[in-house]
Image (cartoon, rainbow, N blue to C red; front, side, top):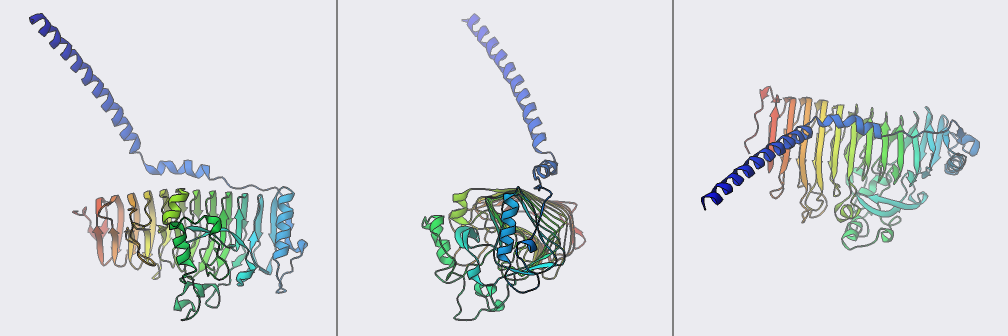
Length: 483
């Protein structure tokens, strides 16, 4: 009996020593992984940028004047543009050139390997007659449908571009497209049709809940849903460079279900309703740089579908970079949502200037419990903010629009980093954050942020782990909020 006890004790001690050794090794491995996971997230940026490859084109030119376009005569040039684009793609690709002058067009449909180049001094005036825009597969406010063609559109094409120093003018105004918003400030009055009519946007929003197939969601005439301006839909390797875009009917640049996209040196000057400057949706590997946004809505708004439709599609918008941009008027400088039901992650914003008494916020995330989705890994650094109206950073899980926006799909917002931000006038709040009781906003970090003037440093509700490092409001160092 004593011998058995001694052997048992020996075996137990040996096992304990072995387990301790194993735990120590496991702890060492876990610590190594932790250190790896805590590396600077900005180290991912070069790899993301390397994947955003530019389209390339043969050295061949197709002048639209040789295909029937006549500048400055006031006649429609759509057919000439179409013939030049078809000839270009059929012969292997190249540049379709629009020389200096005034042209008139309805929908322009790009094809693979075509660089549609609007030279300096050229301006294309787009028709404001809805009948001039054929029905195509598109989306409206994050819900897929068949509707009027975007003014410049490409579907399932590869290697496309819109470039040059010319002007694209949608000619939208209070006399045409903008009226459909249904707001008096845009020319609408009682008795006029608009998108809020029961056969228009409310019908589209209910279609996703009622399981109506996309091909059966047919709108267009009699439904008052405005077309986007530039929409590459399910495309790859896209360049939009140098152009000026004015007076859009609706969203301005809308990459949809697309990847490897560069928007470079573009000027958006459009103050109509929902005139968001650039809205990547269900899109990956996007670079927006050196561009100026002066808009009637969000300057840049990253999206991934609305409600049930977003969950059905299930494509995250991710690996999106914003660099060296200027934001003037708008509801927000860089915004995520509200249509973000598929999720948004890995967003990098750096070296931007935001300044206007008509810019409501610098950085904004807006969502609600109808949207759902996970929004995470948002990294912002090196911003110069002159003036914003409401706040520097707004995180809102109760974004309200149209009717009741509460549901059973509580979203997640986590891992938000602002670093090296200088703000002269932050408006009402430095940070305005409202999380959901069932899903608090988690992990918000402000490092080296200086807000010289603001009414109140922050208003925070249902936020876990918000941390200030070397951050000041109104000249006073900010301590971590006690939540």
